[in-house]
Length: 284
Image 1: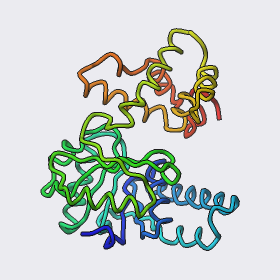
Image 2: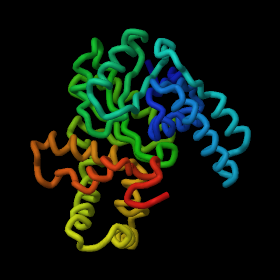
Image 3: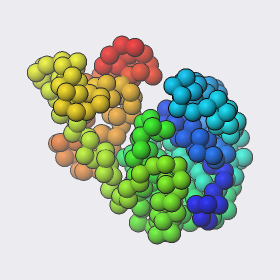
Image 4: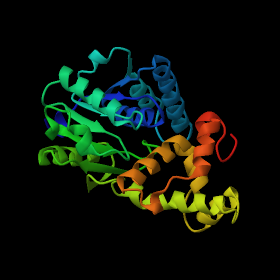
């Protein structure tokens, strides 16, 4: 398998990241099969992608023809067995058993050349690959939200990942107009490990009633950040952000600087997950 020979891509998971990755791949010229266990979520994802591309047309970033071509390259797939592709990437819930089952099934229906990738931001690539017959072709390819816009992508090398797979992913990242960095398999990889304190310290300031969410966000933006921590957590999803922090907390043996916040936990328990639920640290 070479980067040039990749033509068809499966995206498993039609949530925020999945639909962003599907849009990115289709816009880059690949045929995309989008799958989710919830078929209604897949249809909603394609509608959202169409809307995003229409906004790009309105802003003169792409032509109507490019928009139509991209949409026509995305197929909603209801039968997992149809996902016979050159490259597959999952963007599902951060639960290792779910991810391992997905890749075990993908391995059964695809040839040995098929590249298998996880968009996980917190689970060990080496651990996911432990159930695979051919772990050398498996790696992490971690995009950032929104995937069509953010230029950075982390290529994560597990213990069993072949060097040829990493080289292929470097070329593939260039073909989808991303700047790739190589990371060894470590909790949080690079970006999430560094960025975790952007969230945890901001949450501690709020927990201690030093000041409120808008003030913290405003201060961070005047310091050069495009979004404040609470705005960004609402965009990412408070549940997702909390899950990553919790995973890193345990991966680093309960090191206090990674301790999850009670504020986030309370928001999740109340169903206030951010933009996707209409309410988080702010109302939408």
